[in-house]
Image (cartoon, rainbow, N blue to C red; front, side, top):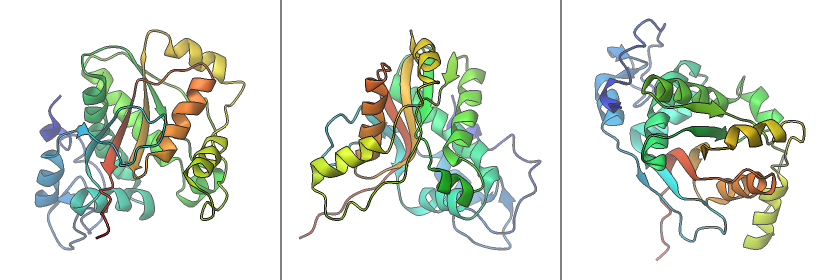
Length: 237
């Protein structure tokens, strides 16, 4: 799959006047971004990413790039600024990450990290489900066998400011209980497929580890995680 071509099929969108990547105005836009930002995003290549320290149970994780610059602004435009049309190009980029995380072409099951009911309301929809749908379309067009499942739900997490790392991990795990009625179908869908957990950003890895544990407890082993951006934690010194 060629990342450079990810923007070519969105010329029919009604585009805003602000670039999603640099937020420049009165620019010539393509897919909601100026030519410079499109080029920067298309030049990104997925690579393994792992926070330090990594939480117990975090699967192998691949990210498109660091959470900075044009990638950061484009994600913010999509998630926080109502630019839902960016789901398609971002989802196609996420497909590149999935392909890198899995390696050789094989059947995959995409499991996006679920959103809380409040997040879905605030963002007028589930932003990761939209990305997963577009990633699946891109992978299928490239000849992959792709299925998706949503066997978990998301509950609000308590304030973790007073918790140690073990306490935060436990709270995160409790925030992603299984949807009992959906688990059998998800298990069947996972048979013979590489299960890939999807998220937009990885910071500490706690969320991905918690979702992985909840899936494992439900009998759905996780092969890898794929994200668009990884936060680079700075050392204090």
